[in-house]
Image (tube, rainbow, N blue to C red; front, side):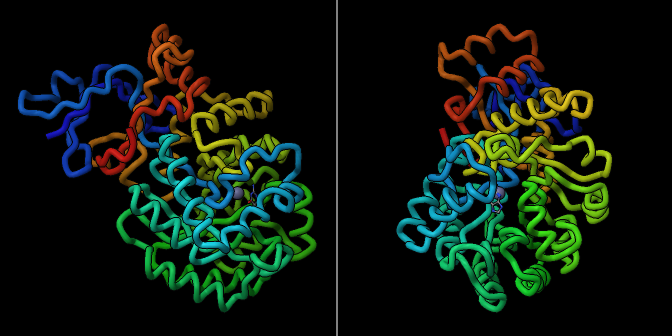
Length: 419
Ligand code: GUN
Ligand code: ZN
Protein backbone atom coordinates (compact mmCIF):
# COMPACT_ATOMS: atom_id res chain seq x y z
CA UNK A 1 0.00 0.00 0.00
CA UNK A 2 1.09 3.60 -0.53
CA UNK A 3 2.35 5.68 2.38
CA UNK A 4 3.17 9.34 1.82
CA UNK A 5 5.94 10.71 4.00
CA UNK A 6 6.28 14.42 4.76
CA UNK A 7 5.16 17.36 6.86
CA UNK A 8 1.36 17.38 6.76
CA UNK A 9 -0.63 20.44 7.78
CA UNK A 10 -4.43 20.62 7.78
CA UNK A 11 -7.37 22.16 9.63
CA UNK A 12 -10.18 19.70 10.39
CA UNK A 13 -11.31 22.15 13.08
CA UNK A 14 -11.61 25.83 12.10
CA UNK A 15 -8.73 27.90 13.42
CA UNK A 16 -6.73 24.90 14.70
CA UNK A 17 -3.68 23.76 12.81
CA UNK A 18 -3.05 20.01 12.91
CA UNK A 19 0.60 19.17 12.35
CA UNK A 20 2.30 15.92 11.48
CA UNK A 21 6.07 16.49 11.34
CA UNK A 22 7.75 13.58 9.56
CA UNK A 23 4.28 12.13 9.22
CA UNK A 24 2.92 9.20 7.31
CA UNK A 25 -0.40 9.08 5.49
CA UNK A 26 -1.51 5.68 4.22
CA UNK A 27 -3.83 5.73 1.20
CA UNK A 28 -5.91 2.86 -0.12
CA UNK A 29 -8.29 3.18 -3.10
CA UNK A 30 -7.87 6.96 -2.98
CA UNK A 31 -8.85 7.32 0.69
CA UNK A 32 -6.75 8.02 3.79
CA UNK A 33 -6.83 4.86 5.90
CA UNK A 34 -4.16 5.69 8.51
CA UNK A 35 -2.07 8.66 9.55
CA UNK A 36 0.43 9.53 12.25
CA UNK A 37 4.20 9.60 12.74
CA UNK A 38 5.83 7.98 9.70
CA UNK A 39 7.67 5.40 11.78
CA UNK A 40 4.38 4.23 13.27
CA UNK A 41 2.35 4.21 10.04
CA UNK A 42 4.78 2.64 7.57
CA UNK A 43 5.67 -1.04 7.33
CA UNK A 44 8.46 -2.75 5.37
CA UNK A 45 6.01 -3.79 2.61
CA UNK A 46 4.78 -0.28 1.88
CA UNK A 47 5.41 1.70 -1.24
CA UNK A 48 6.74 4.95 0.31
CA UNK A 49 6.35 8.25 -1.57
CA UNK A 50 8.84 10.66 -0.07
CA UNK A 51 7.47 14.21 0.12
CA UNK A 52 9.89 15.46 2.74
CA UNK A 53 11.04 19.02 2.23
CA UNK A 54 8.26 21.56 1.92
CA UNK A 55 4.70 21.07 3.14
CA UNK A 56 1.84 18.72 2.25
CA UNK A 57 -1.56 20.43 2.47
CA UNK A 58 -5.09 19.39 1.54
CA UNK A 59 -5.89 20.31 -2.06
CA UNK A 60 -7.23 23.84 -2.37
CA UNK A 61 -10.94 24.42 -2.93
CA UNK A 62 -11.80 27.42 -5.11
CA UNK A 63 -15.46 28.35 -4.59
CA UNK A 64 -15.68 30.98 -7.32
CA UNK A 65 -13.70 31.10 -10.56
CA UNK A 66 -14.69 31.93 -14.18
CA UNK A 67 -13.60 29.52 -16.91
CA UNK A 68 -13.94 31.94 -19.87
CA UNK A 69 -11.86 34.63 -18.18
CA UNK A 70 -8.36 33.10 -18.08
CA UNK A 71 -7.19 35.47 -20.78
CA UNK A 72 -8.93 38.44 -19.11
CA UNK A 73 -6.69 38.27 -16.03
CA UNK A 74 -4.90 41.55 -15.35
CA UNK A 75 -7.44 44.08 -16.64
CA UNK A 76 -6.76 46.58 -13.91
CA UNK A 77 -8.04 50.07 -13.23
CA UNK A 78 -11.80 49.67 -13.69
CA UNK A 79 -14.79 49.14 -11.41
CA UNK A 80 -16.98 46.07 -11.96
CA UNK A 81 -19.43 47.22 -14.63
CA UNK A 82 -16.75 48.88 -16.80
CA UNK A 83 -14.47 45.86 -16.39
CA UNK A 84 -17.27 43.52 -17.49
CA UNK A 85 -18.01 45.63 -20.56
CA UNK A 86 -14.41 46.24 -21.60
CA UNK A 87 -12.55 43.10 -20.48
CA UNK A 88 -14.62 40.12 -19.47
CA UNK A 89 -17.65 40.08 -21.78
CA UNK A 90 -15.80 40.56 -25.10
CA UNK A 91 -13.62 37.58 -24.16
CA UNK A 92 -16.65 35.53 -23.08
CA UNK A 93 -18.24 36.15 -26.51
CA UNK A 94 -15.26 34.39 -28.14
CA UNK A 95 -16.30 31.08 -26.55
CA UNK A 96 -19.07 30.84 -29.14
CA UNK A 97 -16.29 29.26 -31.22
CA UNK A 98 -15.99 25.71 -29.90
CA UNK A 99 -12.35 25.28 -30.92
CA UNK A 100 -11.48 28.45 -29.04
CA UNK A 101 -13.50 27.24 -26.05
CA UNK A 102 -11.64 23.91 -26.02
CA UNK A 103 -8.31 25.73 -25.96
CA UNK A 104 -9.44 27.98 -23.12
CA UNK A 105 -10.86 24.99 -21.21
CA UNK A 106 -7.45 23.32 -21.36
CA UNK A 107 -5.70 26.50 -20.19
CA UNK A 108 -8.22 26.94 -17.41
CA UNK A 109 -8.09 23.41 -16.00
CA UNK A 110 -4.32 23.41 -16.24
CA UNK A 111 -4.22 26.77 -14.40
CA UNK A 112 -6.27 25.36 -11.53
CA UNK A 113 -4.17 22.20 -11.24
CA UNK A 114 -0.89 24.12 -11.37
CA UNK A 115 -2.12 26.28 -8.48
CA UNK A 116 -2.89 23.20 -6.36
CA UNK A 117 -6.66 23.55 -6.66
CA UNK A 118 -8.31 20.15 -6.61
CA UNK A 119 -11.98 21.16 -6.33
CA UNK A 120 -13.72 24.18 -7.79
CA UNK A 121 -17.13 25.73 -8.24
CA UNK A 122 -16.72 27.19 -11.70
CA UNK A 123 -18.71 29.86 -13.50
CA UNK A 124 -19.10 28.25 -16.91
CA UNK A 125 -19.80 29.88 -20.26
CA UNK A 126 -22.97 31.33 -21.79
CA UNK A 127 -22.54 28.76 -24.62
CA UNK A 128 -23.63 25.17 -23.92
CA UNK A 129 -21.00 23.51 -26.17
CA UNK A 130 -18.28 25.50 -24.35
CA UNK A 131 -19.59 24.25 -20.99
CA UNK A 132 -19.51 20.71 -22.34
CA UNK A 133 -15.88 21.32 -23.34
CA UNK A 134 -15.06 22.35 -19.78
CA UNK A 135 -16.70 19.27 -18.25
CA UNK A 136 -14.85 17.10 -20.78
CA UNK A 137 -11.45 18.63 -19.96
CA UNK A 138 -11.92 18.62 -16.17
CA UNK A 139 -13.02 14.99 -16.38
CA UNK A 140 -9.99 14.09 -18.49
CA UNK A 141 -7.57 15.74 -16.06
CA UNK A 142 -9.42 14.49 -12.98
CA UNK A 143 -10.37 17.72 -11.19
CA UNK A 144 -13.51 17.93 -9.07
CA UNK A 145 -15.66 20.56 -10.76
CA UNK A 146 -19.13 21.83 -10.16
CA UNK A 147 -20.15 24.03 -13.07
CA UNK A 148 -22.93 24.87 -15.47
CA UNK A 149 -24.35 27.05 -18.20
CA UNK A 150 -24.24 30.77 -17.34
CA UNK A 151 -27.53 32.44 -18.23
CA UNK A 152 -28.68 36.03 -18.76
CA UNK A 153 -31.52 37.60 -20.72
CA UNK A 154 -30.85 41.34 -20.52
CA UNK A 155 -28.25 44.12 -20.43
CA UNK A 156 -25.36 42.05 -21.84
CA UNK A 157 -24.10 41.76 -25.45
CA UNK A 158 -26.77 40.04 -27.55
CA UNK A 159 -24.60 36.98 -28.23
CA UNK A 160 -24.65 36.16 -24.50
CA UNK A 161 -28.43 36.32 -24.05
CA UNK A 162 -30.88 33.44 -23.84
CA UNK A 163 -34.53 32.90 -22.92
CA UNK A 164 -36.02 31.16 -19.87
CA UNK A 165 -37.13 28.21 -22.04
CA UNK A 166 -33.78 27.76 -23.76
CA UNK A 167 -31.88 28.15 -20.48
CA UNK A 168 -33.96 25.36 -18.96
CA UNK A 169 -33.59 23.03 -21.94
CA UNK A 170 -29.84 23.53 -22.38
CA UNK A 171 -29.18 23.35 -18.64
CA UNK A 172 -31.16 20.14 -18.34
CA UNK A 173 -29.27 18.52 -21.21
CA UNK A 174 -25.88 19.41 -19.70
CA UNK A 175 -26.94 18.21 -16.25
CA UNK A 176 -28.17 14.91 -17.70
CA UNK A 177 -24.84 14.41 -19.41
CA UNK A 178 -22.53 15.43 -16.53
CA UNK A 179 -24.17 15.75 -13.11
CA UNK A 180 -22.86 13.01 -10.81
CA UNK A 181 -20.51 11.62 -13.47
CA UNK A 182 -17.22 10.78 -11.75
CA UNK A 183 -16.01 14.07 -10.16
CA UNK A 184 -18.40 16.43 -11.99
CA UNK A 185 -21.59 18.06 -10.75
CA UNK A 186 -23.98 20.61 -12.19
CA UNK A 187 -24.45 24.19 -10.95
CA UNK A 188 -27.41 26.35 -11.99
CA UNK A 189 -25.75 29.69 -12.79
CA UNK A 190 -27.60 32.92 -13.57
CA UNK A 191 -24.82 35.48 -14.10
CA UNK A 192 -26.26 38.08 -11.67
CA UNK A 193 -29.69 39.56 -11.10
CA UNK A 194 -28.68 42.66 -13.03
CA UNK A 195 -28.61 40.61 -16.24
CA UNK A 196 -31.55 38.29 -15.42
CA UNK A 197 -35.31 38.85 -15.55
CA UNK A 198 -37.52 37.45 -12.80
CA UNK A 199 -38.79 34.91 -15.39
CA UNK A 200 -35.26 33.69 -16.09
CA UNK A 201 -34.57 33.29 -12.35
CA UNK A 202 -37.83 31.29 -12.10
CA UNK A 203 -36.60 28.98 -14.86
CA UNK A 204 -33.35 28.56 -12.91
CA UNK A 205 -35.40 27.50 -9.90
CA UNK A 206 -37.24 24.94 -12.07
CA UNK A 207 -33.92 23.51 -13.26
CA UNK A 208 -32.52 23.43 -9.73
CA UNK A 209 -35.59 21.56 -8.49
CA UNK A 210 -35.34 19.03 -11.31
CA UNK A 211 -31.67 18.06 -10.82
CA UNK A 212 -31.18 16.19 -7.56
CA UNK A 213 -28.14 17.49 -5.67
CA UNK A 214 -27.40 20.33 -8.11
CA UNK A 215 -25.77 23.51 -6.86
CA UNK A 216 -26.81 27.12 -7.30
CA UNK A 217 -24.31 29.93 -7.73
CA UNK A 218 -24.31 33.59 -8.71
CA UNK A 219 -22.98 37.02 -7.68
CA UNK A 220 -24.33 39.35 -5.00
CA UNK A 221 -23.63 42.79 -3.49
CA UNK A 222 -20.26 43.22 -5.18
CA UNK A 223 -20.25 46.88 -6.17
CA UNK A 224 -22.41 49.88 -5.14
CA UNK A 225 -23.45 50.80 -8.73
CA UNK A 226 -24.42 47.17 -9.37
CA UNK A 227 -26.40 46.99 -6.11
CA UNK A 228 -28.25 50.23 -6.97
CA UNK A 229 -29.18 48.96 -10.46
CA UNK A 230 -30.49 45.67 -9.07
CA UNK A 231 -32.58 47.62 -6.53
CA UNK A 232 -34.06 49.71 -9.40
CA UNK A 233 -34.82 46.61 -11.47
CA UNK A 234 -36.35 44.45 -8.74
CA UNK A 235 -37.14 46.64 -5.72
CA UNK A 236 -36.26 44.83 -2.50
CA UNK A 237 -32.85 43.52 -1.55
CA UNK A 238 -30.28 41.83 -3.80
CA UNK A 239 -30.39 38.63 -1.75
CA UNK A 240 -34.19 38.58 -2.11
CA UNK A 241 -33.90 38.44 -5.90
CA UNK A 242 -32.48 34.92 -5.46
CA UNK A 243 -34.42 34.01 -2.34
CA UNK A 244 -37.87 34.80 -3.74
CA UNK A 245 -37.70 32.17 -6.52
CA UNK A 246 -36.34 29.66 -3.98
CA UNK A 247 -32.77 29.52 -5.24
CA UNK A 248 -31.05 29.80 -1.84
CA UNK A 249 -30.29 26.90 0.47
CA UNK A 250 -27.29 24.97 1.78
CA UNK A 251 -26.24 24.02 -1.76
CA UNK A 252 -25.99 27.66 -2.86
CA UNK A 253 -22.85 29.81 -3.05
CA UNK A 254 -23.02 33.56 -3.68
CA UNK A 255 -19.84 35.36 -4.66
CA UNK A 256 -18.56 38.61 -3.11
CA UNK A 257 -21.22 40.02 -0.75
CA UNK A 258 -19.04 43.02 0.03
CA UNK A 259 -22.01 45.34 0.68
CA UNK A 260 -24.72 43.32 2.46
CA UNK A 261 -27.38 44.68 4.79
CA UNK A 262 -27.84 42.99 8.15
CA UNK A 263 -31.20 41.71 6.92
CA UNK A 264 -29.56 40.04 3.92
CA UNK A 265 -26.95 38.38 6.12
CA UNK A 266 -29.75 37.04 8.30
CA UNK A 267 -31.43 35.49 5.24
CA UNK A 268 -28.15 33.88 4.10
CA UNK A 269 -27.55 32.52 7.60
CA UNK A 270 -31.07 31.17 7.80
CA UNK A 271 -30.89 29.48 4.40
CA UNK A 272 -27.44 27.98 5.10
CA UNK A 273 -26.14 29.63 1.92
CA UNK A 274 -22.37 30.10 1.68
CA UNK A 275 -20.47 33.15 0.49
CA UNK A 276 -17.37 32.99 -1.73
CA UNK A 277 -15.00 35.69 -0.54
CA UNK A 278 -12.85 36.85 -3.47
CA UNK A 279 -10.16 39.10 -1.99
CA UNK A 280 -7.89 39.91 -4.95
CA UNK A 281 -10.89 40.61 -7.17
CA UNK A 282 -12.42 42.90 -4.54
CA UNK A 283 -9.14 44.80 -4.36
CA UNK A 284 -8.46 44.87 -8.11
CA UNK A 285 -11.92 46.20 -9.01
CA UNK A 286 -12.02 48.45 -5.95
CA UNK A 287 -15.20 46.67 -4.85
CA UNK A 288 -14.45 47.13 -1.15
CA UNK A 289 -13.33 45.35 2.00
CA UNK A 290 -15.15 42.15 2.91
CA UNK A 291 -17.14 42.28 6.18
CA UNK A 292 -16.06 38.86 7.45
CA UNK A 293 -16.96 39.56 11.04
CA UNK A 294 -20.56 40.44 10.13
CA UNK A 295 -20.87 37.25 8.07
CA UNK A 296 -19.59 35.15 10.95
CA UNK A 297 -21.88 36.93 13.43
CA UNK A 298 -24.86 36.05 11.21
CA UNK A 299 -23.72 32.42 10.94
CA UNK A 300 -22.96 32.67 7.21
CA UNK A 301 -20.42 30.13 5.94
CA UNK A 302 -17.50 31.77 4.11
CA UNK A 303 -14.80 30.25 1.88
CA UNK A 304 -12.37 31.61 -0.71
CA UNK A 305 -12.73 32.21 -4.43
CA UNK A 306 -10.04 33.34 -6.86
CA UNK A 307 -12.64 35.00 -9.13
CA UNK A 308 -10.29 34.73 -12.10
CA UNK A 309 -10.29 36.88 -14.27
CA UNK A 310 -11.17 39.87 -12.03
CA UNK A 311 -9.04 38.05 -9.46
CA UNK A 312 -5.35 38.17 -10.25
CA UNK A 313 -4.51 34.47 -10.50
CA UNK A 314 -5.50 30.92 -9.58
CA UNK A 315 -3.52 30.55 -6.37
CA UNK A 316 -5.54 30.32 -3.18
CA UNK A 317 -2.32 31.12 -1.33
CA UNK A 318 -2.52 34.59 -2.83
CA UNK A 319 -6.25 34.83 -2.02
CA UNK A 320 -5.52 33.83 1.57
CA UNK A 321 -2.85 36.51 1.88
CA UNK A 322 -5.12 39.14 0.37
CA UNK A 323 -7.95 38.05 2.71
CA UNK A 324 -5.55 38.62 5.59
CA UNK A 325 -4.61 42.09 4.25
CA UNK A 326 -8.27 43.00 3.81
CA UNK A 327 -9.04 42.18 7.42
CA UNK A 328 -5.95 43.98 8.70
CA UNK A 329 -6.99 47.11 6.80
CA UNK A 330 -10.30 47.17 8.66
CA UNK A 331 -8.62 47.74 12.01
CA UNK A 332 -10.87 46.80 14.90
CA UNK A 333 -13.71 45.91 12.49
CA UNK A 334 -11.57 43.23 10.86
CA UNK A 335 -10.87 39.67 11.96
CA UNK A 336 -7.26 38.92 12.90
CA UNK A 337 -6.70 35.90 10.65
CA UNK A 338 -4.01 33.38 11.61
CA UNK A 339 -2.19 31.10 9.13
CA UNK A 340 -4.47 28.28 10.32
CA UNK A 341 -7.53 30.44 9.51
CA UNK A 342 -6.16 31.07 6.02
CA UNK A 343 -5.56 27.36 5.41
CA UNK A 344 -9.03 26.54 6.70
CA UNK A 345 -10.61 29.14 4.38
CA UNK A 346 -8.66 27.73 1.41
CA UNK A 347 -9.45 24.06 2.10
CA UNK A 348 -11.97 22.75 4.67
CA UNK A 349 -14.27 25.81 4.51
CA UNK A 350 -14.36 25.50 0.73
CA UNK A 351 -15.17 21.80 0.90
CA UNK A 352 -17.95 22.59 3.37
CA UNK A 353 -19.35 25.34 1.12
CA UNK A 354 -19.39 22.92 -1.82
CA UNK A 355 -20.93 20.09 0.20
CA UNK A 356 -17.85 17.93 -0.43
CA UNK A 357 -17.79 16.20 2.92
CA UNK A 358 -15.10 13.71 1.95
CA UNK A 359 -12.37 16.25 1.12
CA UNK A 360 -10.96 19.46 2.73
CA UNK A 361 -8.58 17.79 5.19
CA UNK A 362 -6.49 14.66 5.43
CA UNK A 363 -8.33 12.79 8.16
CA UNK A 364 -8.90 9.04 8.06
CA UNK A 365 -11.80 8.31 5.74
CA UNK A 366 -11.31 11.41 3.58
CA UNK A 367 -10.20 11.23 -0.03
CA UNK A 368 -6.51 11.92 -0.62
CA UNK A 369 -6.80 15.30 -2.37
CA UNK A 370 -3.48 16.95 -1.58
CA UNK A 371 -0.90 19.45 -2.73
CA UNK A 372 2.83 19.25 -2.12
CA UNK A 373 4.41 22.67 -1.78
CA UNK A 374 8.12 22.34 -2.37
CA UNK A 375 9.64 25.61 -3.54
CA UNK A 376 12.45 25.56 -6.11
CA UNK A 377 15.84 25.29 -4.41
CA UNK A 378 17.25 28.70 -3.57
CA UNK A 379 13.96 30.57 -4.06
CA UNK A 380 13.04 33.03 -1.32
CA UNK A 381 10.30 30.71 -0.05
CA UNK A 382 12.77 27.83 0.07
CA UNK A 383 15.23 29.93 2.04
CA UNK A 384 12.71 31.26 4.56
CA UNK A 385 10.98 27.89 5.05
CA UNK A 386 14.31 26.43 6.13
CA UNK A 387 14.54 29.04 8.88
CA UNK A 388 10.86 28.86 9.94
CA UNK A 389 10.33 28.89 13.70
CA UNK A 390 7.77 26.08 13.46
CA UNK A 391 4.77 24.88 11.43
CA UNK A 392 2.60 27.97 12.02
CA UNK A 393 5.46 30.17 10.90
CA UNK A 394 6.14 27.92 7.90
CA UNK A 395 2.49 28.15 6.86
CA UNK A 396 2.52 31.95 7.21
CA UNK A 397 5.58 32.02 4.97
CA UNK A 398 3.85 29.80 2.41
CA UNK A 399 0.90 32.22 2.27
CA UNK A 400 3.22 35.24 2.13
CA UNK A 401 5.48 33.94 -0.64
CA UNK A 402 3.97 30.84 -2.21
CA UNK A 403 2.37 30.42 -5.61
CA UNK A 404 1.93 27.98 -8.50
CA UNK A 405 5.73 27.78 -9.04
CA UNK A 406 5.98 26.11 -5.63
CA UNK A 407 3.40 23.41 -6.34
CA UNK A 408 5.47 20.27 -6.88
CA UNK A 409 2.65 17.72 -7.09
CA UNK A 410 -1.13 17.45 -6.81
CA UNK A 411 -3.40 14.46 -6.07
CA UNK A 412 -7.14 13.96 -6.40
CA UNK A 413 -8.58 10.74 -4.96
CA UNK A 414 -5.01 9.51 -4.64
CA UNK A 415 -4.42 9.99 -8.40
CA UNK A 416 -1.37 12.13 -9.05
CA UNK A 417 -2.78 14.66 -11.53
CA UNK A 418 0.35 16.89 -11.61
CA UNK A 419 4.03 16.66 -10.84
N1 GUN B 1 -20.80 39.98 -11.80
C1 GUN B 1 -21.37 39.51 -12.92
N2 GUN B 1 -20.47 38.92 -13.71
C2 GUN B 1 -19.28 39.03 -13.07
C3 GUN B 1 -17.96 38.59 -13.38
O1 GUN B 1 -17.68 38.00 -14.40
N3 GUN B 1 -16.99 38.89 -12.47
C4 GUN B 1 -17.27 39.54 -11.31
N4 GUN B 1 -16.28 39.78 -10.45
N5 GUN B 1 -18.50 39.94 -10.99
C5 GUN B 1 -19.49 39.69 -11.87
ZN1 ZN C 1 -17.30 36.22 -10.35
